[in-house]
Image (cartoon, rainbow, N blue to C red; front, top):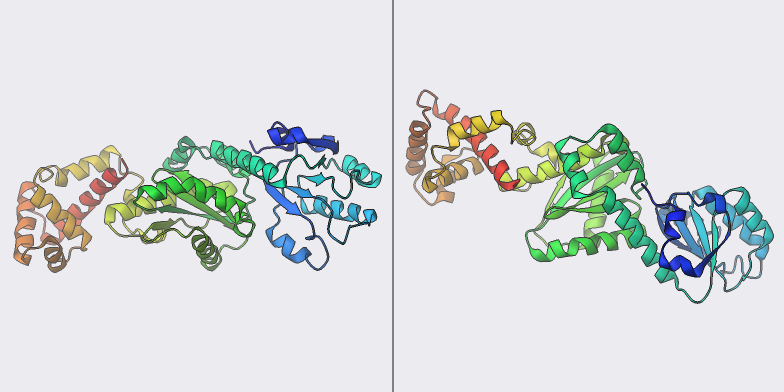
Amino acid sequence: MALTVRDLMKLQCFNHMKLIAGEKGLDNKVKGMGILDYELMPEYIDDFLKTFTPGDLVLCSFLYQYCCNKPEEILPMVKALKNYGAAGIGCKTILYPKLPDEVLEFANKQNFPVFSFGKDIYYENIIYEVSDAIQTDDRNLLTTENIDAMILGSMSKNRIYAIAKNLRISFKGNCRAYYISRNDEDFHNSVVRFSRNFYLNRNIGNKGMIAPYGNGMFLILTSSKDDEKSFNIMLDEVLEYLAIPKPFTCCASRIHVPFESLDMCFRESYNAYLSSLAEGRNFAGFDDIGVYEILVNDRNSAQMEEYMLRYIAPIIDKPDYIEAAFALVRCGGDIAKAADEFGCHQNTIRYKLSRMREMTGAQLETENEFYMNLSLAVRIYRLRQVAK
């Protein structure tokens, strides 16, 4: 379940904070953290709304000139935060040791939690503890087991809805997942850091989230628009910020409605990644994987295994033949390219192809028919290998 203000009060930092109003709002869900000083001034409000996320717990001191020595201006600011969907506020008692009575009265009537805290705790401590708790809650929802279930298609629609609803990300109508991986240990060790930095960056943190999985991570982005361009702009922004060294694999799902089809985002992006590994080249997205779209979900079925073994079993223990088959499939059936990659004459590839037909008992198949069947068997075999 998404964390509430009440849940966060169990954190150590809240030992230094006092609830002064809005006790009936302690079950408000908290999606993130924010700091507010000058942002609600008329000239800055538009910029503030671009990075504000409904559900934020907002820290402030009312030190900025709009409220400095003007306690009557505090109530409009608190009302604005409530209207924008803040989960509550924490006020540092620097300028105003006590908030005006009308502010506390409003907070109590509107069930809007207001905390006060002094010099004995810093903003940074509160932000770090709350942010870490929210990220931990996300990880408890997007466990390896839950992501496995979404990829396999075994999770119920009700459970998918519950997970999407309780993640700290505020979905904006559409979402898309990208599975990102790089084949080195530094990347694997950096995934948690990527996730934390992404969350703390206000410019991009409200556009999505990162979920570690397997040898990489899912980047989940959300937009009110369902067009490729909007998501590509966000992806470029995130990749530039993360600065992942090239080369890396990045495979996209189609665009989906999160509360109905969050599982499809995970499934399609990860299946595009598996297909990339099996094919030996990076597919940009699920729409690009071709025949793998049919093969990848059923790769472990008894029917697929039987079909695969018919063509693979007779050559699996013969390295020259199995590698020649792999090369031919990687080259799209182009014998000249396969010979160049395999480091032999074209006739050698033709000879091996002919011998494979004999070994698999497929003499009645034409060369084209045999290649088509062999290529499917190789792709099933490779999918099963890379998915282990």
